[in-house]
Length: 204
Image (cartoon, rainbow, N blue to C red; front, top):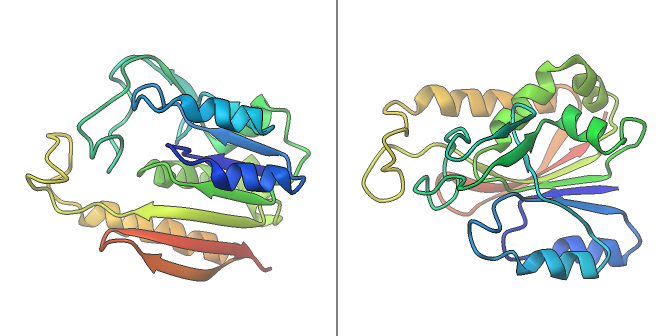
């Protein structure tokens, strides 16, 4: 089983794994806001199970404009949810989809900064911490986003922190904690100074 979070306009990865016989669940609540919801049809026609919800640090429905600020978010922090968005933790997803007894072969996650609260909560929650420590999530393919210095170009939202150092320190600690419980960083490729693609594989 595969979880793929953050579809945007490209679900080719999701479709290719579905074609290889894996059960693929794709999550993204942002497509209508970005006017690219055609990809939902592309995914579902290929057999991918699409869910109009996102990943985060709390399982709840965020009313219009109430989704927590993350960077880069949608539109580098210049856009927010214009309708209610359902957001779920790892434990929330497993319970919602009745997957608590199943393993996840691959988690592909590109959720524009929400990855940090998602994994921070997963490591803190006893149910999902045990899930991770037992190797029941075997591979993480993720784009990570560090906070850039506040400025006029890509971090101009008034909600963007003036001091980003504590946030980036926390983000690195989350990665270190994943490695402590059994994941190994197999590769890392920098897109920009603050955005990296990484691959973590369960080895313990």
